[in-house]
Length: 528
Image 1 (cartoon, rainbow, N blue to C red):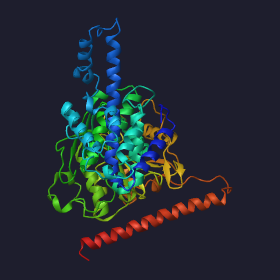
Image 2 (image 1 turned 30 degrees about the horizontal axis):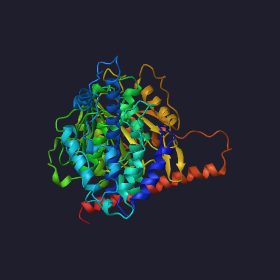
Image 3 (image 1 turned 45 degrees about the vertical axis):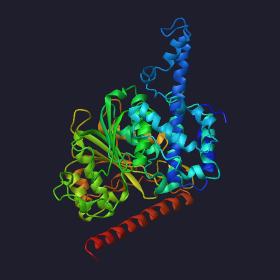
Image 4 (image 1 turned 30 degrees about the vertical axis):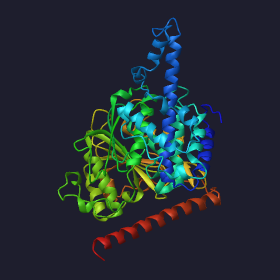
């Protein structure tokens, strides 16, 4: 299967369909690590071979400083590791290159050969130490009757996906890697892709934060998508990625490896560490300029029993061991890691906007401290691994900083529930137009120089004062503030009216379910 760099999605789809056929009975969570590891290895090999070819051509070019007629000198240049490293290319010994695996794909010991290659690559390139997946020889892939390893090797053999090859706006490897991560999320659910945030949601958050320079932190960094999108944002706006520093934390070792591979092949260095962000904060003392994250939704067992009563992160109140308590534990953890003018964008379950009780008191304290900059209600069915309705919180410690206009005592509410495009019966996305519409309102609200003058838009957006929020019991559901857009006449088709009524009814059912869960959580806390 010969492939090219077209971006219509057909390449990624064909590869995935074939790879899935090869998987057989192997669990998606196991298959994910090994398939992505082989993709990583193939991309490294392609980059190496491209650099080697370039060096060889230069040794034969009389106008090049590499020119030589001496074959021994030419071989010395081709094996000089520094010639690869200076171009951000990993040097690969001969038995770690892709052609070696193609030549040995039918060998019963191919799994062991891959494991040995991964170790050799790490030894040759210390930056990769402990990152590359191993265990191919012990994997059920090696015993699979469909010869999954051989099949994957041959499947990826015809791909030309040199990382950063300059063909178009994004490299082929990046597209394939992101597509596979997304598909594992859909295929494996919580087992295969709990760490995946839809690309359009990440794009929206990055466009709002505008992280041109400074410290970027994701305390629940998953596969590193937040960092990759930040890089794309900076490059697309003519910025310099050398001006950002990346920090992250991820609890699962295999996901941490995927994240580091994701960054390294894009030339990004990141301080990504393993551990539970709440119980084992690996970045104590870090004050970030930007936090962008998607924490676990509604996590009741967030670690309340294991934290100290005087933990400085929870100065707005120690949350209870409830689903919304977990959400507000994560929110306060983010706030504690912002510098004096820092901004955070986080995906959050809708229930966090209206929950009362102890969690509501914490939200009230955060609002009264003037940290809520914007709240955005998202469309339904954006996420692959959960049907829980979601929103985005934009938190800022620098509403009065010089970067934007003073937004003290103000919060922007955006109801973007209708801003989506359906790609199938169960999946929606935010298009570029939807993202632009939301981002333009945020930038106008902040008073950015190039933004249009801000105006409230009934049914879509409104700026509310803290006093208005207090009058609404500190509930921050955008629909309470933006109002309902008036219909012109009564010519709305019956089907459209029913769809709207049905959506409202489903939302009320969801709120009822959340209230019931909250009551059950409270009873559990009380010991009933």
